[in-house]
Length: 619
Picture 1 (cartoon, rainbow, N blue to C red):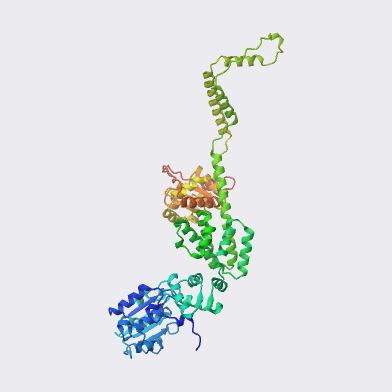
Picture 2 (cartoon, rainbow, N blue to C red):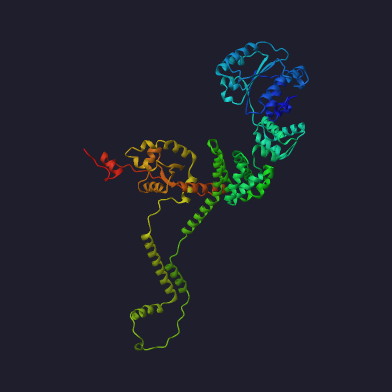
């Protein structure tokens, strides 16, 4: 006898052999017991989830002669169906019988009574392949079929079925089979086939099947052909190009330790072995996700047993904030694989980004430390000396020992001797408290002079906004405001050529909205120069009139460059995870006073926009 594939050999012949779909199975069993059988059913869901198998078991159950134990598998109707010779259970492939003529032929046969069973059951597979004309031809028959006819439609794409057909059927949505149900069914098949397989390998097949029982049996069939009677996880990895948990752990270990060379060499080795890069990326995402679950719950039962050692020994040492950032990079890369011609290059770039996360964080920490150090008040050396003198002045003054009197005529005369003597004489006559108070007054005078000198030599304030202030702006923003501003920001090109608004529109035409609050908007410019120009216009003139014209509400404009945007958003995510976000900024926008508008001529408008040196008016 010719070899039969496992998914055909172990197709369930009763509801007990169906993996998953317990709610659907129970509903159909109850319908038969209570004699509440509909005239048309629609089974829809992913491939390999049991739609056709359940349809056949249901048809067999309807025509079984022993309704108490249906399907019994021993009566004539059950045996005829198992041999594929039952005249009243008809299977139709809609992919090859999708025309109007085939449907008309079916309608002609519907009116005839069943030959052996109680019902004539039509199982139409891939029903979405039928043409619109065929659906319309079948519409009336489905709505009012003979009492002995039951239609069961199966499809993987229910959105392609006409709504008029769906509304006349009882719809059952099949879901992907869970990993545990697939494992249970695979264990049964392995026992029947007398094949040994590791538990880890069985679970790997269930994961690879992605919710499809038929796919799981096909994978098992291929593994048996490769490894015969004893299958290990290494065999599955070799067949399907999957990395082991140890290899994934080593790859992430190189990332953690900043081993650039070892990481690149390992990626090349995996590529030479034919590893599926898409699957590797998905596995790394799962590994990081499970490590975060373990860090947050500390429950090993919630994570895969294959990953427990890697998580405990390596990943648990990485800060949770960094693991979240690594997940963002990998998930974004996995999304880009759809349109990628060279998946390996995308993966290598993603891994380099993972290595760079730590460097960016370190740089941000250093900059924040430097900024905090810069914000500390600095004491001028002169003032510090005066403070030291003040501390000395608080001490009691000891009178010096009397010096021998020397005639002044015997000493050499020098300039300023008289002034020095006169300056010393009053100090000697003061009491210690008076000396301290006088020195304190002198200190305050010198501090005031130092502040004046500092303010006189101080440069203009920086046009770039502080990271902390931008962070507080992001905290006070909300998604709804941003969505509204994004919609209205599309009208910006309409103002580029208007004389009244061209200056403001051109200033922000190459920006993106980072966040929007009730009274403000944060924009991201491509360069620092562009951001400074926008902030300069905001400081001197303001964008209130223009934002009122563009957005329908007056808002202050804050501009940052792309680097600052990336840096601040990283801090926002990290502090949000830690629950340490600062208080939002409260922005108040003063209403502009209405002034008498002076009507400007075209020449004046052009001069304001381009300058006197460019505009020349001619008659």
